Image (cartoon, rainbow over all chains, first blue to last red; front, top):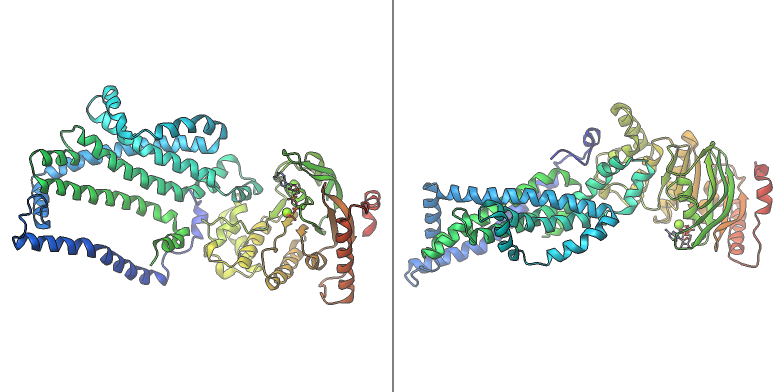
Length: 285
Length: 261
Ligand SMILES: Nc1ncnc2c1ncn2[C@@H]1O[C@H](COP(=O)(O)OP(=O)(O)OP(=O)(O)O)[C@@H](O)[C@H]1O
Ligand SMILES: [Mg+2]
């Protein structure tokens, strides 16, 4: 993404990133991470110990050591890579399509009242359809291979992005737009210097929720029939009675989901520094 | 010279907010517009700013008909309206997009220095106090060197001490390039401290009730007897402007605007 919010000159005045508060913030963050990890680690260790002591055979709920061993085996055989790649590619394609469509339609609906009155009722109606209901239709339309899966993911991503972009544009403070008018900005300059930066924070939020839905829908798509993908690992594990493989795939989903979400967050951070404090407050002590 | 000729505004909802407002305002003059709530002060100012179009009459600045925001007219709102994603310096530079980088930086630095916020240049707007933010807004409006600066209750959200501080500041800044100032206010003190001429408006429909010239020399002593006299005069006029039985006093001013100076 290029720098939409600031011209080169405007950048030059931007407040510097490092502040005396940074170090304190970092330790606080480490403590928070440790606190967040405490519960799963303790539970995992407890279960490990229960199985180890022979109070349970751990067949249906495998202990962490078995899960990690399974993950390790999958990784060593290259299977993990193949399945992860298939899933990530599907999500990437669906996410890209959904974001492109959601952004374009959301921008049009937010910008022009007429198109909003034409588009929004239909889209809201479509949104209320449980997305899995599309699957049979998509399979008829696009076949049982990649296209129908990508389409399903794109539909899942589309709605939060569409709603986020439209809401953000509608929510732009008219008083600030008026500042742009008073300084006689042209239409494109108004969009670039006022609307885009004003919309960006909620846009990032909608991208993140869109991505979350993308991960949800890829599971649905893969559960319904796939020969590779992390979702396939789930089904395969169920059919062959390998709970450790199921949990391993779930762990992989969690890790990749978290990492991709984090990537968006990191990519957006330089543009959202001006509202750091709000995020910090919302994060709370 | 700013000429308002029979300016009127009826909003789409049918409210007649401004009716036949005429005035001639000379370059460098400071005019305070005062009047009860809803008598069309903001409407008037927004029409001069070109943000809303007048429904009737005409507004011209040195012969240019104002129908949209004009390069020589700046406006300061009641709230600072800084852009939260730009640093203080970038906010001040907002209206200078056309200038070379060097000159822009120089002008911004001088303007911030002038409002006493040189040390805040690289800070985000959210880190400013209300008074500081309004000073940044003043710097932002002044830095393109407007010939007319409109102010809609610019200090009304501030405490009394900050307010009088900023009034002095505004006069200081005004003395640099002497733009025309048109200031909407609810504060009689503020009007008498700042203005060369006080325009009293009355509501339903919003129109000019009386113009009161202020002959006091600057800097003005807020405690002097003359100051008190003028304040009383303005207060009386404000009182009368709300009384429907007293007719408008604008006949005199229509025939001879130039009489007072
Ligand atoms: N956008 C608008 N649409 C419809 N009516 C409006 C609009 N803005 C103002 N009015 C009406 O026009 C009249 C004059 O409003 P205006 O804001 O000019 O008053 P004002 O003198 O600035 O009041 P105040 O001192 O309270 O700010 C009021 O009756 C108000 O309700
Ligand atoms: Mg007003």
